[in-house]
Image 1 (cartoon, one colour):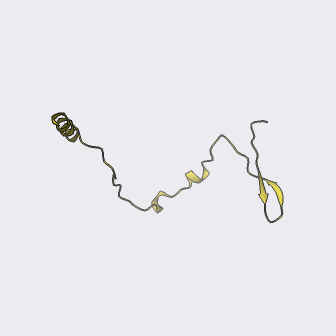
Image 2 (cartoon, rainbow, N blue to C red):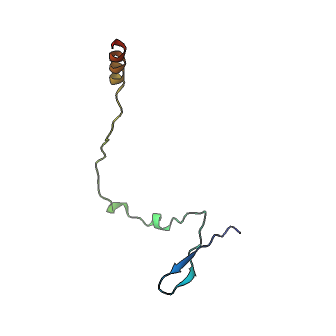
Image 3 (cartoon, rainbow, N blue to C red):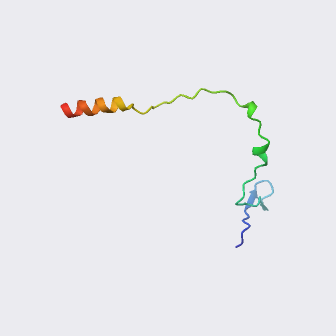
Length: 67
């Protein structure tokens, strides 16, 4: 087994094995370089589960210690 990893694809139409694409450790950046960011929709990011503030943590600690 060498560095070139090959896999085969079973064609259901011809019932035969055909060689698939060669797997590589190096990514192909061709699609990334031609990607058009202007076609992306604008979205608003909302935090679903925000972390408590320092003040809220302190209040909870005080209420636990008095219980």
